[in-house]
Length: 441
Image (cartoon, rainbow, N blue to C red; front, side):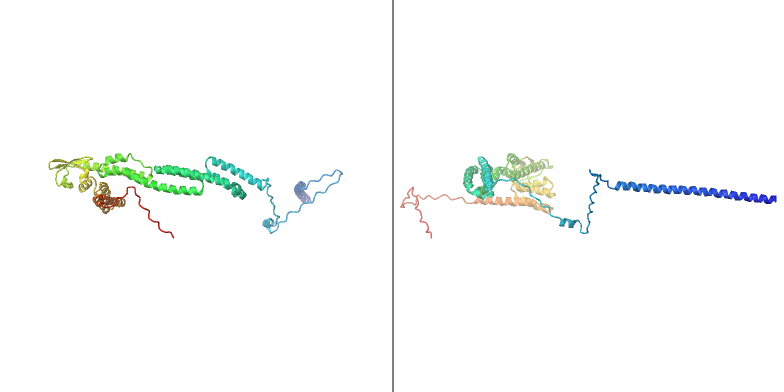
């Protein structure tokens, strides 16, 4: 019994312990449910507050009641613009055009008033130009007013005739001055006078006349300049042909020409003269420094004698002769001896040096020997076209000069006194009778 009672007491304790654990777990679940409820409610409340705040901020402000306490309803909202599929281009095409109104300008008066103002302004400008003798500008000022108002032609015709007559008179006076300058060979001054006069006259007649006269002066100037160049260079060329190279250089350096082409020709001749002086110096050094001495026979010096060449200078060569030393000037040295000595003074295997020797021979008049040297230079590969042209020109000029020198002189008039016996004497102041003019049909 006691044992059964203990078992029953143990069972009661176990049942009470199980009930206690069950009640504690239920309490925890209730607490968790309460907290979840609070969380959900708080979340819902926060969402509700946010919605209320946003709706209150977006709602339009309430209109204040009027003075009589009556609420005035707000105006109905404007309907939103309808976006159609036709687009902006259609809207621009169908829009009403904007009419632009021109700005209003102040009135310039009647046509007669404008014409009068134009006339007075043109007249003042023309008078100003006329004071300076600028007749062309004065005429242009009046003609400009006529182009704007044709009615002014009746008022300005006399004024234009007066200006044109004064322009012609001024040009005639300037032309006389230009003719005097032209006769005095002051060509540039004459051209300048005509240009200034034609610019001031400004009329087609005077401008054309000045142009024709200027062309005539230019042609005469060209001819005179060429003749002057030849005249000034003739002494220089004569000195070159006679081996007086230093004298030619002294004369040429004193010359100057206004024409660019003639000044360039002078510069070229100065360069050629210096080249001739240098080449002759090399030839003299060859004679003076030769060991053994060069002989007359070796170089084929004219004279038929043999002997050594003792010395050479700018004007002569001293050589042994039959009765002592001979003084041989360079022009008497002969073309063949000159060519042989010049070849010994440089590199005869050089085509450019052959052209150099040909230029010396050309300048002193040995044209056949110069042609031989140019031919040799061409065989060596050179192209002396300019030198060949110069040589041909010199040959033709020499031929013309020779023909002119050989022209027969005019025979003197025969004395007719011996054959006048029995013939009537002519009256000293008698004039021949005029022949009858041919009949004009």
